[in-house]
Image (cartoon, rainbow, N blue to C red; front, side, top):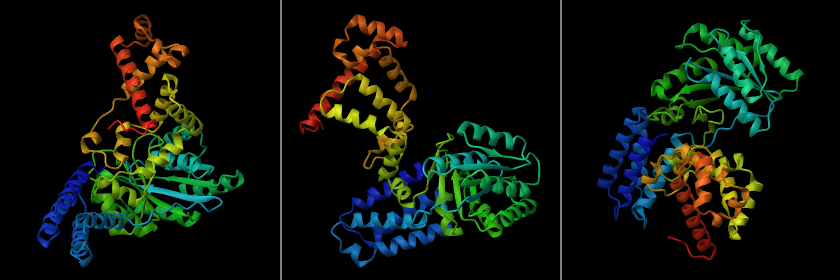
Amino acid sequence: MFESLGDRLQNAVNKIRGYGKITEDNISDVTREIRLALLEADVNYKVVKEFINNVKEKALGEEVLKSLKPGEMFVKILKDELIDLLGGEKAEIYTAGNPSILMLVGLQGSGKTTTIGKLARMLRKKYKKNPLLVACDVYRPAAIDQLKQIGKELNIEVYEEGKNDPVQIAKNAIQYAKEHLYNYVLIDTAGRLHIDEELMEELSNIQREVNPHEVMLVVDSMTGQDAINVIEGFNNRLSLTGAILTKLDGDTRGGAALSIRHLTNVPIKFIGISEKMDGLDEFYPDRMATRILGMGDIMTMIEKAEEVIDQDEAMKSAKRMQEGKFDLEDFLSTLKQIRKLGPLENLIKMIPGVPKEAKNIKVDPKDMAHIEAIILSMTPYERRHPECLKATRKQRIATGSGRTVEEVNRLVKQFDQMKVMMKQMKNGKMPF
């Protein structure tokens, strides 16, 4: 996400860091590059103008000009302004009701029905809520079936009454939730190909009758600046409490995300980062700003790890590493844990200070699957004692895993090198 914009801004940042001192001329030079980067990313031109003026004014202040490291001060100003542009503080989702009621709205094709499933999953997993999905899109063919399929996949109940009146369905669903002890209700509403009076009237009626704590708009980030018009159209009738940006993992320039809060005052609360059911993240303006500027996002990485990694298993492997007893059984366990974190290239981008070349590395998931197949073709004894792997054993392992002897040899060699590196780190001798 934001790769193109991030590259352009990082180039500008590196340029300013290279200056011995900051002058009005080189500030103008760098801010010109930043302005072009933002405009090319489809950020609203009014937003760009105000953003650049703020950066220039603060960068030419006495505190920066007299600083021993003016380049670093400029980067801090740029980061702070970017955080402010994205909304400043993280906007929390309402969870105090019993039940809490959330109404999801949006245009057809924005990913609304899939998003409501992702949101329900997050509410159950992170916030320990017992969610109920409500099917109020009675117009789109197969919309109810799609929501029921998502509910089945997540093991979350879907309340539906077929093609009945959406307002009555929503009211009945709230009563059903109270009777069956559901503490979060998520209402999936109908979308249209464009904003129209009929759509808005129905949504207004649902809002008036059930009085939801949250009314969130799902916006396709690929719509660019038109997303602002969509948000304003919905916000004028519904008083939105938040927005969810979908498809940020696609080939999008990202301008919508950088313009939304500033122009509409509607906070971005979640972002869609993949099509999978775990592909929804809470939106942190500070973390997004540091990622755009190439400073990594270590907090999100830690949270992802805490969510999916078995802590006992991880501690066990770490202890064996420290004791120098790490073997292929432990390596296989660690590999499985890493795969739960998602694509490796996404994790690499979250690490602060990683070179641009490393961020562009593409890791084929099949490569990790091949390694697993090789290790699983070994006997438990061979995994615990990889030093016993001679030619005949390697041939058997290659045949059993459907890989080549060369691949088996490469894995064993890489594992041996890793053990040497671990030993050096244990003795306080870093291998680089």
